[in-house]
Length: 373
Ligand code: PMP
Image 1 (cartoon, rainbow, N blue to C red):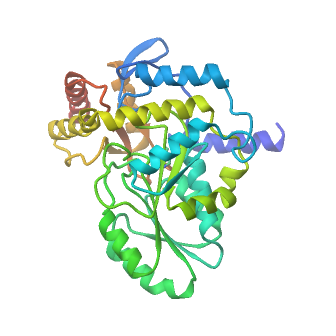
Image 2: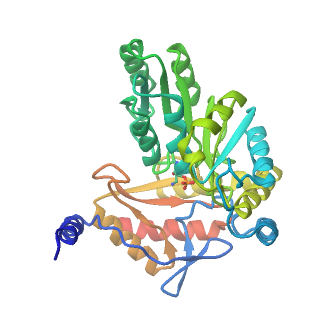
């Protein structure tokens, strides 16, 4: 074996020993939270399609029309030829939804987070990052070259103390957090974070990937980032901000400038999904109501969003529990380190407007049986 392959094999063996190796599994999805693996039909509680819009007939039809007119790919970066009118319409609607002057659509949420921080802060500046922030927020923060300090999860006093101690040494400061934490489903104290940031003349970038349409209460940050791939059921990412900030990002965000524009069919699907999301408040309320039904049945802390962690601790136990549920027809994927901190492997249960009460109750019953049995 050459050194490259033996390096890879050694690393894989180490991952295997800790039950941390990841393997791809083919999954098919259908309407009403249906999923299939290895030919076995299941109800998925692991998709981020929170409003069940990825299969909505109007969303699919909008994508199909755009696909037939414009083709499969956008053919170039947006600054060259990949800027289709439907993307501009989507940006106007996203900005209006968030009460901002403007929006910029990126190829994905990950790309948005890679691009925003480095366009606004650099090596002389300071970033304050919630310690549980998503991997792409870390990646964007690192790419900026700024000094990165973390603050304890959702603890504004820690944020204030760290800003007070370090702010004076840096010309600019950026606070980064998530509105709904992707693996814990809890909410950031946005009003307090924004006021602490303002007291120290720091800007705030909030990642709203898991909140759009669902948990949007509370004040908006000057920089509101999100994705088209979860509650909008499509693919792509965005940032909503002032016109000046968006115009600067068009010039400076490298993950915007140097990558191919979003396929127009994805933008058309997201635009139709946003229309439905705004028309149907009951659809928006449903995932959190179902999540609360679930937490109540299991005696877990009351759900704050559509995401509920069932913490197991040990990675192998989390995998075993997930496999037992799969055998009963529930797709609930185990999440292990390094996605979550060591010792906190969990089932991440994601609720959708497409679930029925009976499906939620059946899952709660199955988890209780395996957990307590
Ligand atoms: N931010 C958070 C909090 C996320 O959970 C995710 C996706 N898992 C992203 C950003 C990335 O978004 P996308 O999937 O559109 O790249």
